[in-house]
Image (cartoon, rainbow, N blue to C red; front, side, top):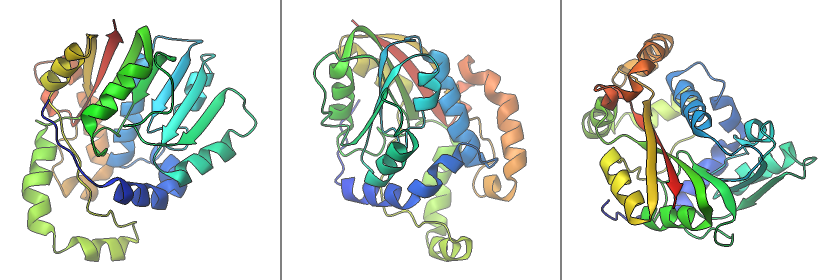
Length: 263
């Protein structure tokens, strides 16, 4: 995995602070974006195998995973760059002693070595300034024989290749108009990495972790802007294609979730 470092922490924090009040709604939205969030969370939970354990979610938002993991008698820790996300989560779980949420960065996790039975992270590594440092921190705080569950954007997804290298460059002039008309929070100029499965396999091996499983998800074949024009149809088709998650056609999926064990 080639190191690609950014200097965008402040921009990322600003964007997610602005969207904190609607972030939970994305997990119940019937749009293509909502489905991407929902199916990613479902795949992560399917990989989870440490009921009753100590769990850390790196990039936890307002505690998206806390409810599901508490139902499995887990003690939940979450850390997020966005102070607004953390504030919302603390308000939501203020009466629960088994939920601990705090502000911080993935590159400098404020926890001792080998504290957690399971460490997970979804939709975070692609945004951090130093992705290799963040991944090493995730490995560091995970116990020996502990589980690591990570979600990544698929480098070879046709949807992302089209969007990032064709559609976005051709329509950059129109996006400010779209944000004004739709009243959506305008995303600052922030980079989003994509990854290959092999690069993650190689990195985990270098960190003395055993690669256990991978599943691809969110099979959105409606190339931009079709996913916005036909959101329900795009979701319906994506649901039908989820069975391809471990097939030879898995790279159609826009994301993949990895499960590993720290040796």
